[in-house]
Length: 335
Ligand SMILES: [Zn+2]
Ligand SMILES: [Zn+2]
Image 1 (cartoon, rainbow, N blue to C red):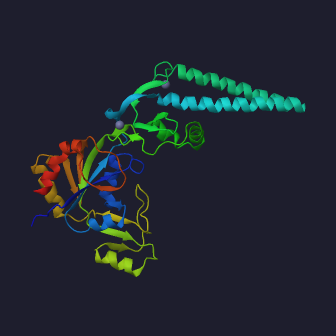
Image 2: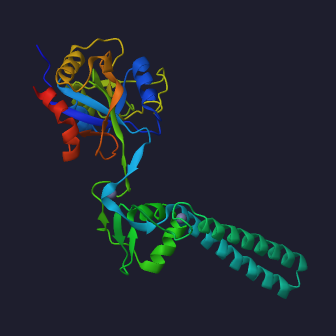
């Protein structure tokens, strides 16, 4: 009896834990897959037959978003401008110290402070030179046409592109100054829907799929009996300890978390059947697929444009662009 595919999922593999697709595939082939599932509801949805999880990775390759190109502050000069502000603050600070030391008749202190003023003045010159010689905005115009990610608006009506906003909001010192000068930004600033406000689109590659052989829950040890019974009823397996497990690219498995796992030794009919459908539809060439247990690896990953990066696992609701590239896959799976 052919396995019915009920739901296709897409899971993103992060570059932090696995810089290259190969890193993930190598681990999957030796240890099997163990992919963390964000929550209990999702874990339950993944139990039983009919779930296929495609795996995506961008290998840190991304392209500027074409839908939000606009004039914005040069990203290189933005950093330099920030250094200039800090440097100017320091010069002010040490100039005050010079005066203080003078008044107090502290010649040693005066000398030291003067030295600091000179050093920072020199640094300031270098920073201005850096802007003049900036290659990105060509000679210090400080403006460049880039993907802005959309805009946010401050209380005083001033606009800031979202890419800068994301940069500055992670720098408490600078951010506080911006808030003082402009008021807090409105929450409903316009984010570019294509890139989600980051200004780039990852070059996603689908490098394989797997069909979970089990859904596991790692016990913390203090779970309520009702909770344990509930997940057992849902056919989720409990794991008492992970002490003897090998460390993975993403670290050790965490108590209190759910995982979709595959074994390396079982040869699964459902993976082979699914693969056969993809091959029959001409989506994957037979020689491009390597099956190991419940995992099928595409030797040549399939590039798919238009997938926004996300964390965890999501039901693969294809957006139109992706659909174009991958509707065949879904068709193949539904038949
Ligand atoms: Zn520049
Ligand atoms: Zn965009």
